Image (cartoon, rainbow, N blue to C red; front, side, top):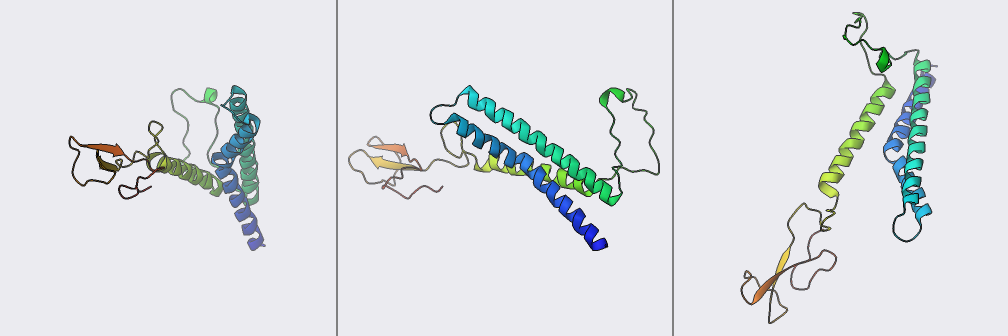
Length: 187
């Protein structure tokens, strides 16, 4: 019987992890997909932005509710209610003199740990993408290195290893259209 209970607990934790990851990934992607279906061709419209916002809000709230239901089922299965007391902000003491119980220590349950890990991983992946992989909105470069330049002399199309002089000019190569005058720029 213990193996069966462990299997149920593991299944609940996996479902909580999947739902919490979809709050960060699946929900926004679904909202953008629905907005793209509403938009069609042409420039973006306010209707499409509104649809994306409404769908994202609905999906995020539904997934948060699913996580809450799964977490309460996990707590009922383990007979271990949450040790962190939830107080409404308007019922909290302004003096901060709430009783601390010596025999109780707040501990995170497995679903709460999964939620924390999912949030930390989502933020870390976003920061990695933002700082290292995203393109620059200004000049469509990655912004992570310098632009490869090629020196082309005015009289011929061949590349010159010398610096730009009066008869030479420097051109920046676009990654989309590499020139034959030098090596292809790295992506």
